[in-house]
Image (cartoon, rainbow, N blue to C red; front, side, top):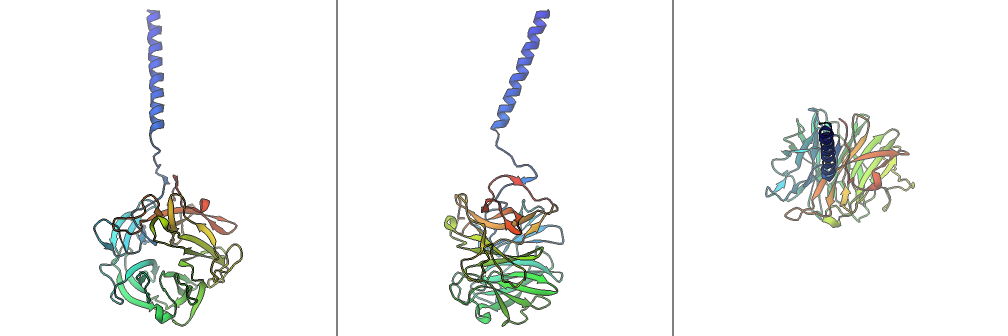
Length: 355
């Protein structure tokens, strides 16, 4: 009896050990799953190009992108609108516009900037085509971040303000004054990123002839961020929309004054072409990261940047448009300069923003 009991106990022990080993092996073979507090890029696909992100009164983050055909048979989305509570999980709300503005023919609604101004959501938008000789910037407003946005029409055209390729608006307010930054690529000497003052309601320019040059004509997609004693210029260079061959990248400069001069880490002014300190560029996996949003701080004080980038392994949607996915990366600050890890889009599970 004793021998039988010992033998039985040994059998049970071996069986348990065997099961334990089997369980460990199976667990190791399972793919790594994201934890609730982690995420990996992209945070939305197929497309949210030139993203603008705003925290709305209802507690949601809303994201807006350039008019695009996602290749799903639904045609062009007239400024797609997304929303999220955490910057990681995004859902589609709809389109900001029911139809295109009427003040210019045959144009696309690109690179919008959405902000709250005087208790209304203002959408400053580019209205342009590729190689457009006379693009412009318009304004639409809404009571809700989800829209619908009602077009208020044109602010100005390129030939009215004397700057080629007037797209990529960005709104900035300080000391009870409102400004619009704008500008894109051109080889002309009159090109660049400029700033103009807006009226108190943000509906028009105070003086179309009074503009300040901020950066040279090899930048576009301006974003200005104020932190401590500096204003930081974020701008994109290179090609945005050539699929896996896109060369878009983001460069930065800073100034003690909103209107500049903005200098890179080497002390060079970005009003001269070829300057700017690299923040993020393409990697083996992603091409053309750029046209970033405003910086968003989470409840722990961490700063985050959203932008678009293109998967080199899946660069186009059906129909041929570049698959500019929405990306999210943490911004660190080193010696009062913004830094993104390895200066490339994040490509691994990482801690998510805390909200």
